[in-house]
Image (tube, rainbow, N blue to C red; front, side, top):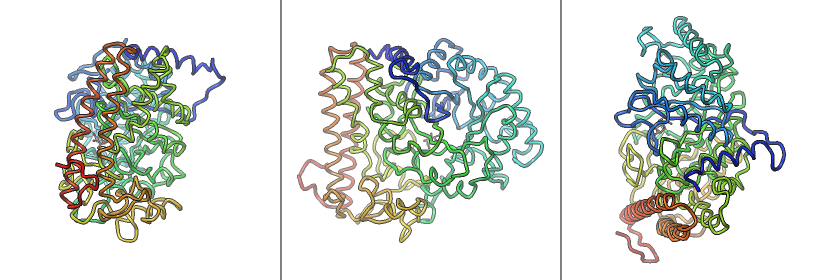
Length: 545
Ligand code: GCV
């Protein structure tokens, strides 16, 4: 039963980790980190947990430390059981109250770290790069200013007094309004190395995020491409980062969309320690109201970096993850970082979470979950174009929601065609960031994979895909199919009524109903939008509003 699923998961995994079944297990990734986006204060827009869909924070509520140590310990045990060995406890967007976790609120970090330590997990902290200024101590946060360097050295030393095995800092700098070294004309290597200098004597590290881009773009400026940004900012700095700096790179070049190519940064910085970042919390993949098992998507980046950081999907919800089946994503993140073989991960999760499941239940879960990522992809934004979500909260369809904003996530649909030209020949040149043979594979319409076509190319609606369909017909077909697949998930899940607890069955049934409502809305908005743009009817004559 999944209500005590975490318990089943924990016991089962301890057995696995001990190697009692098939011998010795060793992790493939050295550091396997979960990043919380938990706030201390309730943020007026983002709430207690930024992009959190599982209730409140395990650590803080309304500005106070919750002090529920039992729950934190149980959570630590659950994470250790999946193979996680590091946790960053607070949001990368570090606001004024959260900045004080580094200083006068560090005892809270210490208490949390005491719980994680019992399970071999080190505790890390997100910091605000301008903390010396924000906390009122200095007039500057210039990383080359000796006063600033002394400030960070002292802050790191005090943190280590409180948390002797302190893991280090996570930094989002010069990104989406967060401060950073650019303010002082310094590079990201200058900024990261300053923090590394403060932490290294204590054996602690800096995770420095590569998610740096201009979010004030003009759609007419076709030379600026958000997909290019991380590579353009970071690859010139390869070899300049200290040994204890880990540059943390989102798995795709833009922002956790359901389908993106693998970030080119992951293969372009051979002299830098890299971590790949996955978003376990389902911001763009159904917000834990939709079943969307992400193991197969993440598998695309396995082996490209020695470390993993995964954004948590856990909160104080009784099922931990809001949607009970989203536990599988948490499990997959830890498990794939331990052993990057995606084949049996979902099956393992089912075995460990439902230890006495009859084969009918196993088969039901597989039918509902196995292809759920592809199903989600079918009824949302087509062919890799991404970002057709409602602005702000990012749930549900709004094709033009971001099209006339400065965020740089355009699809460029007009009456002739759709997609972003990122070719060297006629577009932003992004394809050149890939090494051969991927660069030419993505550059050419002949070889670009269908599922990424609109990420790399602007094409007419009548463009013929490798599968023989046209772009417009593919849009109609996938959207009708995707919504129908959700209906089939509901029918399948009904058969589990007597095989799981009523509470679990009801929760999943309610969420599947919402998934169908939402998938239908996606289907109808996308199909109508592209029918009206293109004027080309569905050749099967299905209803388009
Ligand atoms: C924590 C996306 C999300 C933001 C998030 C950001 C990031 O843009 O919408 O909520 O901020 O990514 O990864 O820093």
